[in-house]
Image 1 (cartoon, helix red, strand yellow):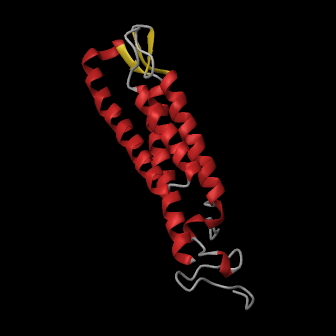
Image 2 (cartoon, rainbow, N blue to C red):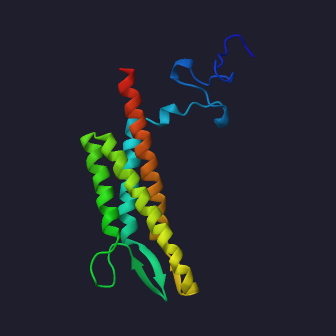
Image 3 (cartoon, one colour):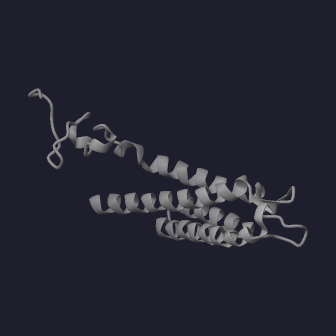
Length: 166
């Protein structure tokens, strides 16, 4: 090790950048990823996850004997469960622009809980065997619910950290 290299006082790994930019992560080859979790990147991620959640409601969620069923529109009997996903994603976007990170976190957690509920209800389809299969909308709904909750939680923690630093 050269004299000009600096090491982290916590773990002993070498800094790729200056030590004032953050803790070097040995799991990521010593690269500091704290620059990726900026407020702008988190906001873009929340907007993208919300858009994917809305998109998942119109994509085929289930395929029954060759027919596709989405979460938003059912067989003519009105709106399906997808309206709740659209409302939650819209609330996340509204709270994001209003800078209400706690409400944003609550809406993101509600999106995750609703996605997990839909996931648990899909287990009942196993009784129908190969007549029913899950479509791309189902998987996109689950992934966007997880991503939305995680990004809202990171945004909440970052906002809380920035307020305590001031």
